Length: 410
Image 1 (cartoon, rainbow, N blue to C red):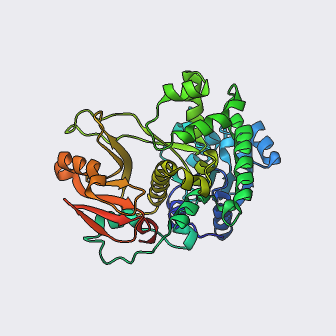
Image 2: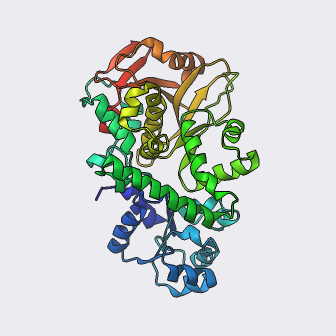
Image 3: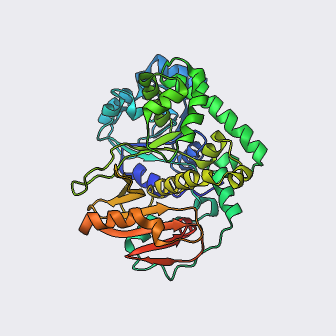
């Protein structure tokens, strides 16, 4: 059992909003957290993975909602989108905080008309696979520290061998795989993808050539950390552009992939506007790439994209509970200047982060950071180079190299 850092935010949402919707991929711990809170707050619990409730909800959504006790938990609510209008009708007659607690393994708000039905009535949170801090019962504040700390020199730094880092990356954060052997993880991920492609995707959309989905996921894994090039992926997969775009939307809906939009500014011209592609979990990414630890040692070029995806997903998780409100972007110009991650605060200030799989950072590794700092003026807050060593290293020109372990120990 892992303590989830988003728990306090979910509890606050239940206290102030008529409807709380907790989204996230299957097997990320939604149901475990929801059942805990349901028991504490006396919610009546139903799951639409139960065929009895599923059939009843489909047959008569209004009657299903009217007859069940309140407050009410509906697990996997996306399976019957028609319920949202029935919930809206009930909330409009009984507008009290915490009346509905919903979960979804797919984002139902991306389904036409569903998003509008609960506008102004729902608070939405997303739960991701376990963060590195959650694995050790720690609530990370790395994002807050980036903005608040005048210096990083006094923070203790945990040592981490390259072997230990690679293990963290290839295990990932899904709760069921923690403690499994490499062989058992392989079986789990295989069953996981099979279940999702044969159930959740078919539930959401009657798409053609569903058998092509596992191979498409493997191709997407090879592009993780790169600009999303639909034409190239279409060529490699043999899937027509229009169909591929539908597949990508579905994979985002079920939280297997996500895209990082480009940071832009009127100050800098020649900014590329393509998003970058990532997998939601590096354990899944490594499985799709068939990348055990031994393969990473043999083919060092694999670690760069895996490490970048790892850092990006850790920041995405922490964004859920850190108090500093930021958006995550990437930065790239047409002439090759790039920064892996740009965090933009609500007031427009930015922290730029470059990720390097090196134990000996130099200012040369920070050229993208220096370029961005030079061009953004007062919007600049600080530049960080995350690397695999164990010392805080000032690189000059306001750029600081930080050990990767600070990402989950601060």
